[in-house]
Image (cartoon, rainbow, N blue to C red):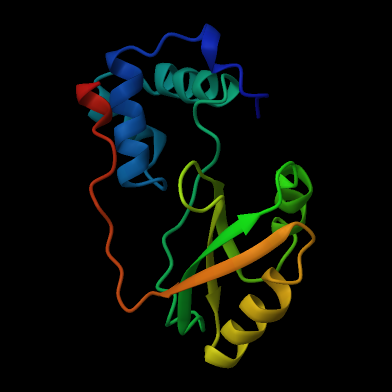
Length: 159
């Protein structure tokens, strides 16, 4: 995969259609993708490869039914951190079990972390001992997730 050099690649209508189809179904066959984009299979392969090389397609993913997969408790945890501790903190967060996603923010909190754990006991441990124990974390605030849904995401074809 690429090093994120998407600045030099111009996305056109065909690329947008390909991206929209891959976002809707990352397991779509290249044949079906080509049909939906109204291009040849060979052209579809080339386009997807170029989008990957440019760093525009960063990977392919699968949506999980978290509770069925054994993750019965989820929460967003906001962190207030010591100034200039982001790099080390990001490295530490990327190695912690149960951390699904984290982002550096501008606003009342510095970092937002999404965690998914088997149960409330593990949630307590992850927040109170793992996250609060990281170097640079000054305080945390936790929001439990009761239910989730997915929005439509960006409308790639209208950009």
